[in-house]
Image (cartoon, rainbow, N blue to C red; front, top):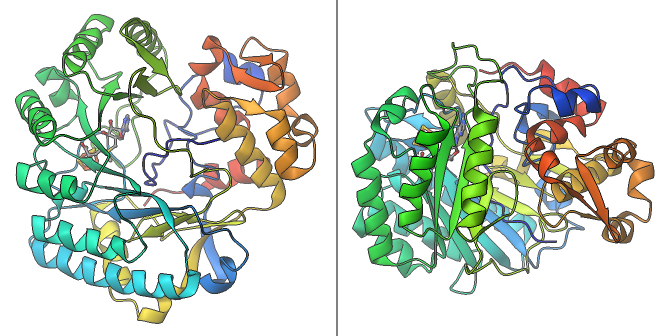
Length: 457
Ligand SMILES: C[S@@+](CC[C@H](N)C(=O)[O-])C[C@H]1O[C@@H](n2cnc3c(N)ncnc32)[C@H](O)[C@@H]1O
Ligand code: SF4
C-alpha cells in the first residue's frame, strides 16, 4: 500500500493528550485526541543509550525506494496554533541558515557513507517553512539532495507559505522538478486568520496561489483549518468555496488543535465546539465537488495525478536530513530532540550545527520498534487510510493474524466504526471522522504511557 506522506515534521498532540482507554470512549468522547499519522509519535522517543551506529541500523534494510526528507526549521513568524519544531526569525537569520546548510551537507555525506542508499523514490522538504531559505540556499539544498540520486524521476514535494512563495523561488523549485507544492492558507476570512494567530493576509494567500499556478506545478495542495474561534459552518464553507475556485488537486482540512506552549495554548476548549459539524459540512461539499476522501484530513480531486506507487511507508525506510527530521527503519525510529519554546528550539539547532561530523553517523534519540509495535503501526496506518487494512497483506508481512495480534480490532469490527469487505477492514464514515480518537485507541500501553508522560519544552 502506498500512502502520501506529506512531511515528517511532528506535532505535540495534546488538548490535553490522553489516549482513550476504551472503544466506547473513542467513539463517544472527544474525536480530537491526536493526529496519528506517525506511530510511535515523537513524544514516545527517548535518548538511545548507547547511541546506535547508522551503519548497523540500516545494514539489513531495503534502500531501493527510500523516502528522503529534509527539515527546514525556520519561519518568518510563529503562528498562534503552531507547535512545530521551528525557529522564528532571529537577528542572524541569513547566516544561521547558511550554517544550518553547512551542517546538513556534512550530515548528508556521513549518512550516505553509513547507509549507502540505492535510490530515493520520494523527496520531501518540510518545516517550518522551507521557502524561508533564500533562492541561493534553496539551490544548495537541492544540490545536497541530488547526492542521494534525487532527480527528475523522483516524486518531490515541498511546503511553502504565502509570504515566502516568491516567483524566483518557485521557479527554482519547478526547475528541480518539484511535483507538489503545499501551502497553508488556513482560512479565506481575515478575522479568522487573526483569531488563529496567523500573521498574514487573505490577499497574500490569494496572490501566492496565483504565483504557484503561474509557475505551474502538477499538484497544488492547500491547507485549511476548522474550529477557529468565531468560525461557523457557513464561514468554513465559504473558505472551502474560495479554495475550490483555484481547483487545487489536493486539500487538507485540519481540525484546530490548541497545543501547549503555543500562542493559543492558554485557551481551554470543549470538544463540542463545532469542529465535527464543520468537518461534516466541508466533507459533503468536497465529495460533491468531485474530490475523493483519502483520510480524515486529506481530499484529492478525482482527476488529479497520484504519486507513483514505488514507495511504501509500511515497508520502506525514511532518511531525514536536518535538525528535527525524523528517520526510520522498520525497527528503529529516530530524530533529534524536539521543542517548541524559542530558546529551547534555538539551543537544539545550535547543538546540532556544532556537531562533530562523526556524530551524524549515529542515532541519538528515538524509539525501538519491536515487532509488536510494527504490527500496530501497520494496522493504524492502514486503517486510517481509505485503502484500509488488508488482512492478507498483514499476514504476508508478519506471518500472523492481525486480529490475534491487535485484540482491539475485534472490538472495532463489531462497532459502527469499521466495516469488512472481503479481506479488507476499513473505517466507515462514522469511523473516519473519529480517526484522531481511533488511532490513539490502537496505541500500545507502552507507547501511550510514554506520550502521556511527555513534557513539552
Ligand atoms: C508546516 S505547516 C504548513 C507550511 C507553512 N509553514 C505554512 O504555515 O503555510 C503544516 C500545516 O499543519 C496545520 N497545522 C499546524 N498546526 C496545527 C494545529 N495546531 N491545528 C490544526 N492544524 C495545524 C496547518 O494547516 C499548516 O498549514
Ligand atoms: S504554521 Fe507554518 S508558518 Fe506558521 S509557525 Fe508553523 S510552520 Fe511556521
